[in-house]
Image (cartoon, rainbow over all chains, first blue to last red; front, side, top):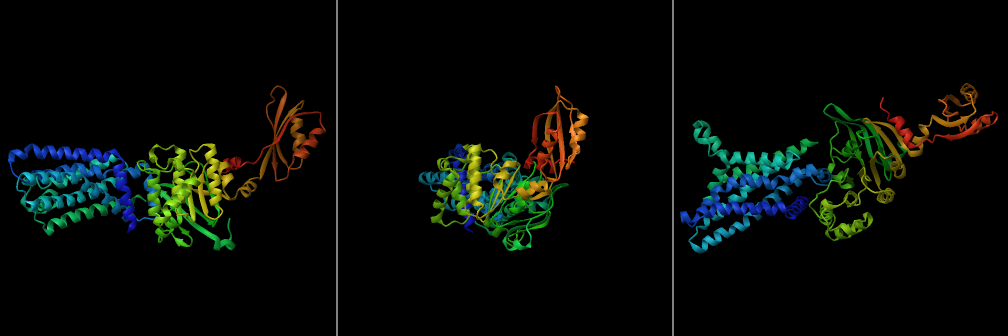
Length: 234
Length: 321
C-alpha cells in the first residue's frame, strides 16, 4: 500500500512544519529530564528505572496531544472531504496517520538516548532493561497513539480530542494502581488491562508474549474503532 | 433530457437518488444522466441539495436510497475505481493550512498514482493553467481565497480525470479570476465531463451546456439553457408608460388586442399612467400594441418588453409556495 506511505510522509511533513511539534518535544524533554535527574544522584544507581517508571504517566498526556490533530484538524478545516475523495481507502489513511504518530513518538524519544549514553559513561549500565524500556516505550506510544487517533476521529475540536484521549490513556495507566481497594475476584482481570503493568514488565528487560499481545490488542482496538468512526460519518 | 439514443455516451447515471439527514430530506428522489463531455450546472438556492448531491456523486456520502452509476460502474461496489476517474473540488477548497502549496500538490500527485518522473511536469503544467506558480512555496494557510480556490482546482485536475466535480468553483474570486476559471472549465469541458454547482445564474449561463435547477431536493427544470428559457416562456410582459390617457379606455383598447390576456393600469403618477400588459403565447406583440397606440391621442413615454432572463425563470421555479 504505497498510498499509506504517502499519507505517512505528508503527516510527518505536517508535524514538523508546525511549531507544535517542537513545543511538544521540548516539554517532554524538560519534564522527563527534570523528574529523572532531580532524583538520579540521590539514588546513586546507574539505571534508567526512574525514567521508565514515570513514562506511562507522561505519555498519557503527551501522546494524545500528538495524535489530537490527525483527524480533528481535517474535520475542522474540511480537508477530510478532499482526502476521502482521493483514491485512498480509509484503512490506508488510518495506517499512514498512525505510523506518523508513532514516528513522532520515536523522534521524541531519540534525544533521551543521551541519558543511557551519559550514564553508561559514568557507571556500569545494564543495557538489557534499557533496550527493553525503549521497545516498551514504542509499544506504549503506539497503543496510546491508536487511542488518541480514535479520540481525534470523533470530533472536530482538537481540545476535546485531547481530553478524551488523555482520559482513556490515563485510565489505562492508572487502572493497575487503584486495584488495592477492589475485590480480589476482579483484580486479576483489571490488572491485565493496566498499561503500566505491562510496560514495566518489558522495561525490566523481559519481553513476554502476554505484554506484546496486550499492546498489540490495545493498538488494534484503537485503530479499528477509528475505522468504525470514520465509516459512521457517512 | 437525454433519450436512449445517447445511452452509450452516458457518463453518470443517477436514479431516484434520495438522502435524508435525520428527518430532513436534503435530496428527494432525483434522477438524471450526464453525457460524456457535457458541462452540467446544478443550480439552486442555498440549501437546495446541490452540495449533498455532489457529495453523493463523489462517493463521500452514501445515499439513503437510489443508485449512482459512473461509466457503468456502481459507486457502492467500485468506489475506488470511480474515485480514480474523478477530480473533486469541495466548496471553499478546504486544504491543509500548514503545508506548502508545492508539498500539497506533490502529495496529491503521489496519492493519485502519478509516476515519479511525471509528477513535477504535471505540477508545473497545472501551475501554468491555474496561475499559481508564484505561490508554490507559500503555506496554503496564508493564501487569499482566490489563490486557495485555484490550488483546489489544480488538486482536482491533478490526474487529468475523466470527470470533474466542482462545488461553487468561482465563489470568492474576483471578476478577472472568474472569467479565467470559466475559460478553464470550458476548455476542460470539451473532452471531459464537468459537473458544477452554483447559485449564480450568469455563471451557469456562461459555462454550462445544460442546467439542472434543484429546489428543496427535487429537480424543477432540466435542459439546455435556451431550452429552459423557452419552456418557461409561457407568459411574458410588456411595460408601457402613457400620458393623456384614461385608465378605463386604455384597459379596454389594449385588452382587445389578440394575445393580450390582461392590461393592468397602475395609479397615475403626475399624470403619467404605468401599464403592464400580460401576454400569452410566444408571439411578439410589440408591433400590434404600437399600431394600436398610434391610432389614439395618447403620448407614449416608455415602451419595453420584459426579457425572460434565467433569473426570472429561476425565481418563478423556486418560489416558496
